Image 1 (cartoon, helix red, strand yellow):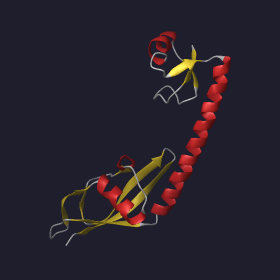
Image 2 (cartoon, helix red, strand yellow):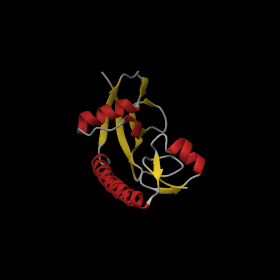
Image 3 (cartoon, helix red, strand yellow):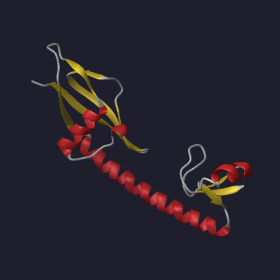
Image 4 (cartoon, one colour):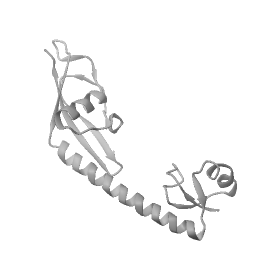
Amino acid sequence: MQVILRSDLEGLGKRGDIVDVADGHARNYLFPKGLALKATAGAVDQAAKMRRSRDQRDASDREAATTIASTLVPKIIAITAKAGAEGKLFGSVTTADIVEAVEVQTGIKLDKKSVHLDEHVKTVGEHSATVSLHHAVSFPLRFEVSAAG
């Protein structure tokens, strides 16, 4: 049975896509939960409109992410944390600390789920994190950790 997806479903498709699914899956799961509707002639036109709006929203999101990336890539974000004499931190620098420092220093609000650290930051010095703002836009973010007085 051909159905039009009304929301993004992992492993099946994105909103507005026309996909083939088993009749039972459509009747027992997708239709009752409002996740899909049957692909009729009028609904296919509606699906095309859904895809166009999704593509426009995706393009504007990608453009905004690219603008943020071009602003943050050349910068080095300064973070202060309590540290011992040898440069080891009491605790570690988290993604929430990084997001807060970026907002204070640049005014750009990031989601802490979009920031990924490869390893725990437990020493002073320069480190980097990967920021993924869009499925097509990810960039390295450099930050300098210094000991708080």
